[in-house]
Image 1 (cartoon, rainbow, N blue to C red):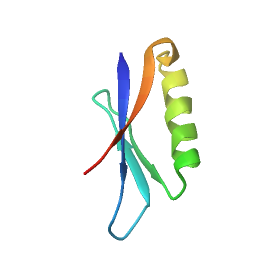
Image 2: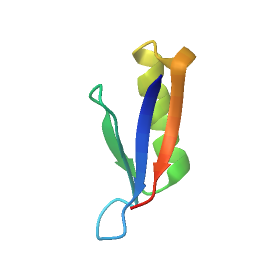
Image 3: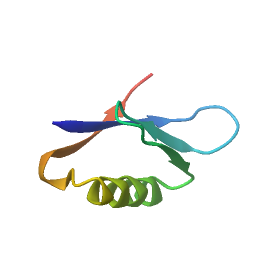
Image 4: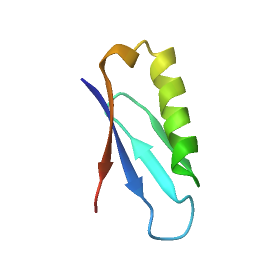
Length: 58
């Protein structure tokens, strides 16, 4: 399964950021915008059939 890890940034800068093990890295100030970026990337990489987003609590 393709999983993107999403984190809340509690410091300065972008509020939300995400990474995975396939090369995706991105951020946005709104979670919905970040999810849209992740979805678009997964679609371009043909990964939507086996796709998950995981919120990581740090």
